[in-house]
Length: 111
Image 1 (cartoon, rainbow, N blue to C red):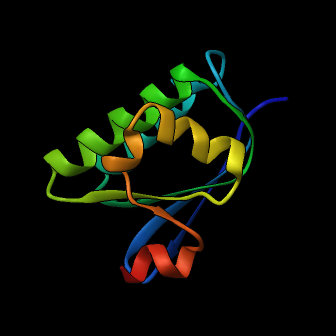
Image 2: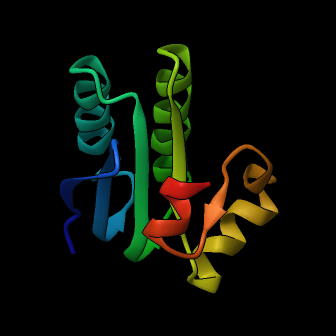
């Protein structure tokens, strides 16, 4: 299954909702899309991972890269993630310490 990324705005944050698989095949395209968003001035990003079916280490790398780019430009990146299998990846890699994980879009933009 391919990755689909829908972009919207909510209270000054750019929301990227992901659907499908974020893996070695799809991560480079997402990385480019996130670089482009930050380059265009979207420094406050929320990645909504609720529609992901699969996430691998290459996908995690793309998310880490986006966090670094956003913070370098004075922004931030937050994640919406309630799926146990996806949250577990952030927990076992200790990335849940670097990324705030939120239960909803509203919680992510209001924190």
